[in-house]
Image 1 (cartoon, helix red, strand yellow):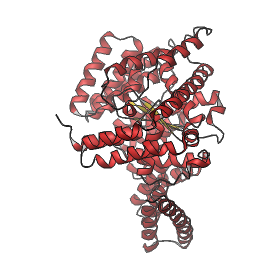
Image 2: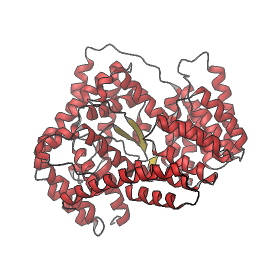
Image 3: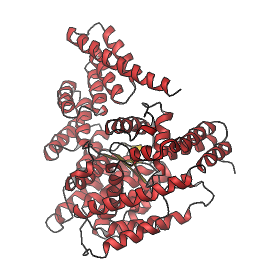
Image 4: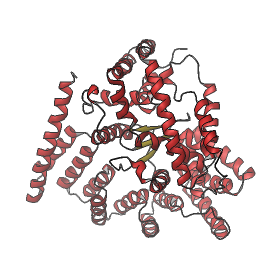
Length: 514
């Protein structure tokens, strides 16, 4: 049966962007960037992509990823992934690269076992991969591998080494994306045709890049205090899962190359390593429970999650039972059954309190209080939600998800001025976080400060790479009757800066013939 056209187009675009674990994914990332009219990368024959341009390219790719409906914008999940990733980087700060990138770790909905690295320090994980990891060491091994890709600047190195060969698969992928709008069959043929021209040289570099990322990831995993054997265990499971993929798919669409040689190399490295027993924290299991619900929040998906969690409660170990109870509370919340969600969460927290002095794996986690706040908001109790949010901020002052949640609660509790003060302080610390600007705009809207609302939206759109929309918001702010003189000075300065930046981008597009 011929696949639905829109489904095929969506999946092809996703594959172009979200390919992983191989340097062939680099071409996919660049194709996506070019299709989204990102800044010109210059002549590939002149050398590597600069670290500054790498970061800029990654940021603009992430703008599109965050707008994808499959991007998982969940506070506790993001908090856990970034806490885990940065704990690895703290042990090996040199892995941040020559420009000391601030890494960002995130998740997307997709049942396929996959992960991917964008240039500039952006690393994503499919929900299926997170669920497949049987220990935190396994998940950390994937993180270490992807950090290796970023720290060794495989995108820039490929552009420098492959030179004009890079344009062959790039052009094929771009044509495939365009062809998908009218004919899935034509799209596949175009992609396959272009791929064969320089496949051998690509694969040669791919194997080198993968081995290099493995070596770095192995060392990061070891230095971070995790079991290095987790890398071998997870790659073995990944290799087994690829046997179910169709042999008819073109090679660049396969999300992972053959792993036998890599596994042998890792096994050799493990030979002289002593076995390291590591107890995983409860937050690893709670994250898996949230991901299982978020992966498919439709009626059937929630029903399947309930069956899975109930089976865990009956047959799992202590960690599995606790995370399953949390999962059932989260499912009830998603179904808007807030009383059941509250009951199950309270029962869980009582059990955790009883075990706190017995179990080493009961580390502090913000997942409990985050769900408790959401439940109070669902029950239309903003005062109780605010009380819990304030307590949470005191206990977890650096948790990014809770910071956003606290601002949302202040706004819903009709305390926009407090939200404005809080958000402006956060923006001074995290200037490149567009979500803070969106929340600030929301607070200004509730406070009926229209000019400031448009200015905050302008800042958010600019951070997301949408300069025309940002400039339009500046025009709206300037025309507002309540705009202040000082605000006009800020508007004029921002307008000059963004117009110049937009002209540079247009000039780059014109130069490359777009």
